[in-house]
Image (cartoon, rainbow, N blue to C red):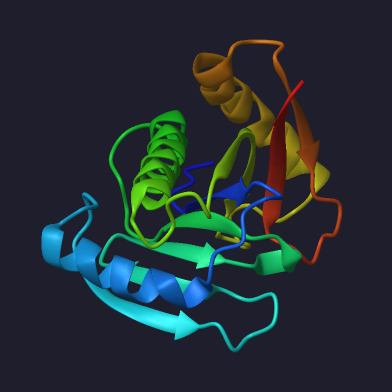
Length: 178
């Protein structure tokens, strides 16, 4: 499987209570200051959508968002453009991009002390239903890649992998420290 479009979400800690709208000036500042490696283009506000995408930073190569999907606040990195390298390299890039953006966001004055991300769990999805449907076969095919990447990030045997069971959802795995 030649997966290109990984989505990684880091969940906010339960004690985090930011105003989503505060991400609008933050993301505009990121555009002006080139705070992300991608070519940042625009900011979109979807706060009005219940359990939706929240506020997103649209880049040519990816989308960053402070979202409330599935009722859980978190930072999402969604790769949109083709990236060279192996599937493992692409997944590692997406995880690193999410981690880096989360660290920057936590330090922004608008969120300092009000937003923290849980570094004990990640949600990894493939945004390509045709190439990676949410089936046991896809799980079997991608589990070695997930393990290879997260073994190098947190250490072998230090986490669990849990698949999303609903075949209507994107292929999604939750990675949680044990």
